[in-house]
Image (cartoon, one colour):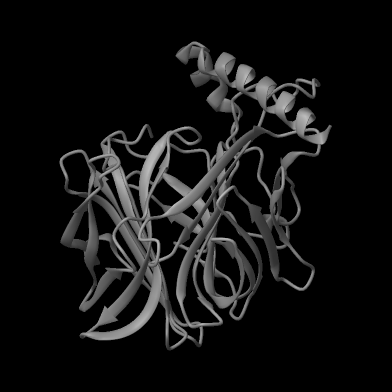
Length: 367
């Protein structure tokens, strides 16, 4: 009975989504005025800002990390929940009004398989089946969820057809506010920005269901929570992004926004040591340099899966766990991207592990 109810719920959601996509562009642009804008003088407040921000256009909670089985075999994982606002009138009292959508992506990287295993879901928020709640992190999409406990740890569960995850993630460091006090610019125009914080070096433990087995795992992860109402620069084509848990307890996050001319439109990096001292790099100090590419047999896109990243005078080299870590989410977010576990080297020495995201390589993102 519950399964039939959920199928009806999804069917109604798809109809309403189709109606939304048929809205005139002028009407959607007018509705943009309903969204709260990102401003540089806002102070993030917790636990409130752990939770959802429905007055903003788009938001996501994004977890990536490296796990190790009891047999010392490495696995990469990703769990992401998106909360886009649809532009429908927030004052509409109908429970069927599709004001918010909840989208989930989950993926497992296993070198023994040699190809990313992933799943995705989309539903209209409502009826207790899908939601992103305000006040603290509490996101649900049918039997997928991501919730923050009073002690600051996170519990998450994903049950997909080919795999499952049931994990606990415990903080070992303080929050890392990106940009200046959490105001993170995404382009040359100061209005192109988001609110953004990270939790690096999360200690992970739990169970992975994979290939007919339940595997006990432990490892480290990185959480990003970001929300905004802004579009990227119209000249943007896509982005390259990396987060790294360094072995000495430091944390590195860097990204570049690529223009349609294949040149850097904007770049950012922040490096924080284990004692909390952070260095914020200027855009001209950050450079992403492709080393080796891989062509996807699934989409024919060519990705720079090996990268060198320069932050001022330091150079980092990223090596993928394996090449085929492409995720095709055109049925939910409309994008195809490469999302892969990478090992990080400095001066030819392994110094950490992280995740690299490459977008806009199949086609320019609809930004």
